[in-house]
Length: 167
Image 1 (cartoon, helix red, strand yellow):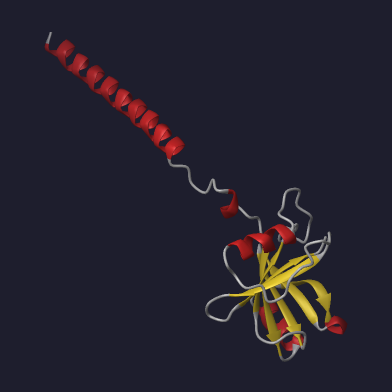
Image 2: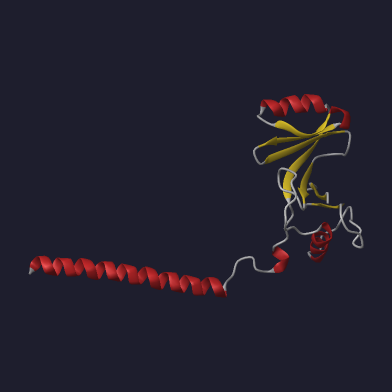
């Protein structure tokens, strides 16, 4: 009889735990429906592949340096004065004499392998979003155009951010 009481207590405890889990899951799903995360359209822009674009003094010296860090040349060349260096998903663009300073770069429509992605926000959509947030656009894409275009903003610390769409 005593063993039966212990077994019943274990079963009751297990049933209570299962019921608590189910109720907790149910209330969490209700909470999630009432408090969705990032459902506002303006918070969901797709900016594309990310890389840092570095202004370098000697593109070949920089190429050798980043190769010692495990990067390989993915695009560009000595005659073009730039290389895009890749290590896994990490991308670094090294550019000689093409721009001042360093930039953060996003490529709408591309993944980190410069392959077209199916769903992306066109540069003109991104630019409208940036303007709607009150940001000053340093370089504007023609909003009446289609296809390749660029726009540029500067963050509060002076860092340049380039959105560069290639298709």
